[in-house]
Image 1 (cartoon, rainbow, N blue to C red):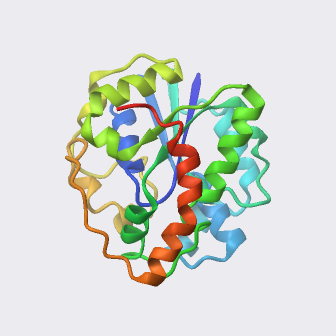
Image 2 (cartoon, rainbow, N blue to C red):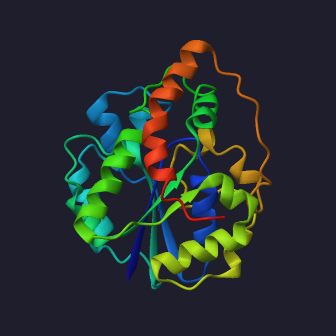
Length: 241
């Protein structure tokens, strides 16, 4: 089985990407499997935090073991939607050596503006940028290769071309089924879906890209600016649109 891990920060198009992969007949997906251990370790009081920890568990080790060894369905691809900020300091990143890793990025200004609508405060670590770069650098050092990096803006501008490039980089065939999907929730959605997925459940494909004005305060812009160097490390290697 091909095990693909897509590493994203919050408020990206990560759930739409999960929908795209799940719409393939050869793929099964898992939604943010390390969320519970992240909440338990950090003490973050996200919406439904107690339910999430109870549902997923507080220990990352058995979860990672399942990500590497479970055979969840008679399919050939196991797509794992991961949030990079869920990689707390105690998580042994060596498990990623057994996955085909890819990175999904979005400009910090856009991520923060969206994030603050759900959470009143944020740090670069909350948005996952330092963790994303640390993992990217580790994979590059371990493999001697640059893992695929996809900018969400470019995917929205040209879904077919970008997903074709992503599939090629991951060593799997592109499937036209990735470009559209039926509306609604999925059994594979995390139990937090009712809080976070209000737009995705109404979607039938990737939304048209529309630039948004920067409405960050000076204090908020300083947070986004602190994320920018990490973003630029990854953006330098992003697949061309």
